[in-house]
Image (cartoon, rainbow, N blue to C red; front, top):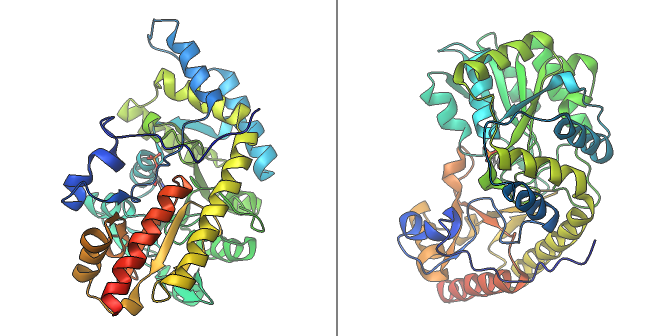
Length: 393
Ligand SMILES: Cc1ncc(COP(=O)(O)O)c(C=O)c1O
């Protein structure tokens, strides 16, 4: 394995990239450095590209089933990276984590029943719940000592007999909290007591900074495992979001069968050839690349933290413990949501995600994706500092 160059600038314009080619649609201008939708501006690693090329070279792409080697590669990764023995018979393939959230909701709840989320949170959680006629129940997170924290008393109060499901984001997007074992254990026990099934979206599990450790919710206790559906994907870790591959891990046989039945009803069981090829290659060969990526991302994060403290003290980033997303507390700028949006897009010319889309607690915040070459990050930071100095003068 060689040394990977994350400083390389790869032009993504005119590739139908959501992040680049939908800038005008999203921001009303192309003149922003795009730091919004969660994919990275780094090359997908060679061991994945090579595996796809090898498969493509066969030149016949008929219906394909998932080979055992796919599962072995994944199980081995989970054991090595997360110390969790995932059994083969717990795993179901699904074309994406967001589709899996929908499958879980349809499998385990009925219209009118409650689904709990902890806001601010990954925005597709809301339409999945509301557009499918379920009731949104919120346990807003609180900022304590520069960290987003769960309000456990409020959580306990939210959990009544109508709340059948919880969408847990672990690590958390936005905010990047890598929930601690004790936090998850308390949450797991509360949900068990109330018979609320946990859907643990662990798509960011591999992107964890030094000093923090991701704990799979279902690895806590056997009882919690029996009450948890875990969603995992190589999509964020290895920058293959466009390939749509994921798995659900469901140790409880009854929940497994209900989830599989919904997948079958939707006829989602036949995978995309390139998705499963990339998935297997990622988990088989990915460690060395991931270590280098994490070092680079941590360098970017330190740059954001230092620069903002020095040059833009009115913007206070919440330091993420994982993910490549930084939740910027812009409340001291004293702007309305509309003014803050215009400040970022028009004045600073950076394209971030607006806080309010993440629900309660999002006002006054912006989410910044820092998975880009350092030179691009530095340019974006300089632009925000310039805009802020004009505003402050
Ligand atoms: C918490 C979370 N879940 C799911 C997804 C997307 O999953 P997929 O593309 O596999 O549907 C994202 C992407 O940003 C995410 O942050």
